[in-house]
Image (cartoon, rainbow, N blue to C red; front, top):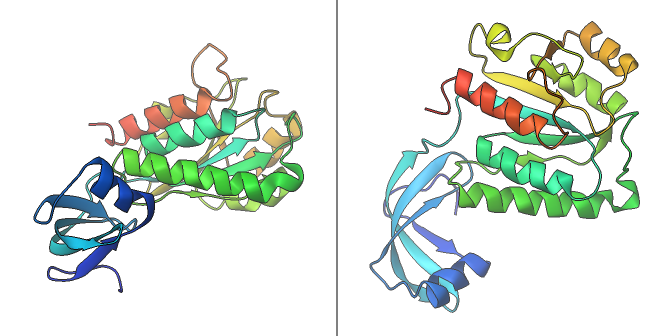
Length: 236
């Protein structure tokens, strides 16, 4: 059916979620279930019945989700080693990021190589699961990895803050007003090269500091997101 749904419409939960509701939770017809369509709408529903392992729901009310931040944040993450990207994606989604773009920079030690499509598919699944677990109103997108040169026009299409280990302004200085959309750029383990900083600042990006300690590449984006969400009133 077309979304958004309205009271009286029927929805179906399929796949592992349907199996979980019926076999693990042992829910019954008449039980209440709150579901989200991934487009910012929450639905109050009742279980009308089952069709195999599919759960048939009757919509009783539709409301706009209250879990989405007022600011849309895209995280441009310098491509890290090992499984760090999985950790970053999971926690960034929990903190409210709207989109994550892995960026292969000049100092990225690891490269996505010919497994980029498979990695992106896995990362998107991690993001979807994190969004469901924390009650997000949307499913944040994980883009395919791209080079710094490819990402630069995207990064500078909205206000961009570069988390730079060599210093910059505090987030409280940078966020004099609450933007509708903002980007965060965090380098990989080796940091951001002088040429990349020059290109970013020439395109209008502003350097941000996360304090006097140098944070790991998997810690910095989460610290920056927490600061940004707190300063824009999205952690209240």
